[in-house]
Length: 249
Image (cartoon, rainbow, N blue to C red; front, top):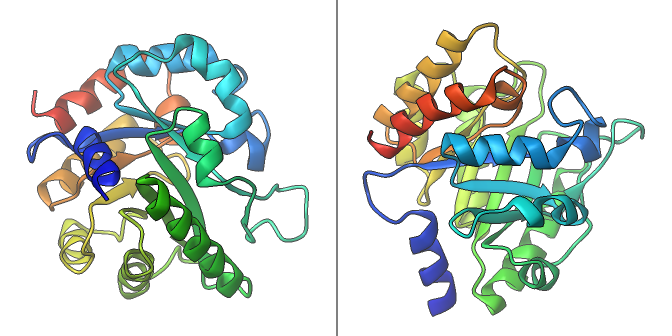
């Protein structure tokens, strides 16, 4: 019990400091996309820019470990599928909380895609991961997506976030519901910290930064954004602007 409490205090050390987390697991599902050709140089840039938490697959730790700063938190993502297969929306557990702890993780990350035929199997996997994390005192982040053509209505996104929390997730990542008011409502109805995800790359920096800022004002606990950050060059100046928004600078 105390282990999870201590680790969550590291993730959220104060009420006015939002979490700056960056998922870097995309190469497993999408291949070595633009920005992720090499992990170590990108990780250096993100840390230089002020990122708090980097989330990678368990095999990618081999590239990350040599450049990971002592102050940077590590998340291990254990849900997997690839775009090469016919069921890419069906994420399957490919690791355990014990493996993540052995790799030095500060939290475990699991993905659930709501609204697809395999939703039930992914909820079962989430329950398994929650039980593993509870026994080890490891926080669990659930990336809760609604896989529908519109990305999910605000009602559907609230439902998905609440379902993830009610199954035991300690932190929930969700999609932007379209407005600050809807995001504030989602945060109020989700009883754990909520992180905003980036999704597909937005057209310009200004739109991206506006969503980050509005999410903070609406009560969000921070961000968990990948492509909208690391596919913009140069990474460091933009990361510093985000860190300023999230860390109260």
